[in-house]
Length: 253
Ligand code: 1GP
Image: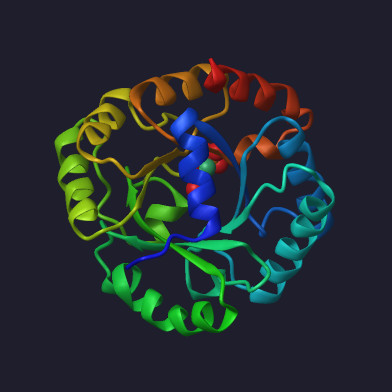
């Protein structure tokens, strides 16, 4: 019998009540102190989850320092928001995190990103004893760092059925979370129709990210059935808390 870990149980519990917002910290963009300050502001604005990771992260030492700094803040905060790894490669594992989204980039053309990195990284996850949450990662378009690094066969936004067949495969493979990625800084977030089509056949935790910088985009994704809205780039603009608070408010409606 598979026993779900505490982070996954918490996410299931929270998303059952409605969509939540995740703040994504890329250790390439933030020093440990900046990361802790940014996470504190994001949590203050209502983020329910902090994700740490990025597609070009090279230094595991840097990741550890960022995760420890963020955890240091969370330890003092009553919300006890989980700090979860969102790895882009084998460098994305840190024993200081609460859990890892153990993901397979299903539409990569390179088996390394589908199962190779996972095999190489697995021993580190095993040793660190952190909770592992299986995730299918689907990347849209061909214009993002993620699509370039992950050598993806980018899903076209205009063909929801292609996303659906990958989502079905993820479901049948037992992947309990699914991330629809438009790419960090995407001009257009994942279209509502695509989220709706995937939501219809996928009953795990549905994560959507890329290009969400305003409450309207978050509201559309939430209405279409997303459980977790990931916000990354926005956190780098000064005074982002106001917009994030609006995004969270929109989700709670
Ligand atoms: C990237 O989906 C995330 O992996 C977040 O994207 O940086 O555009 O918010 P943004």
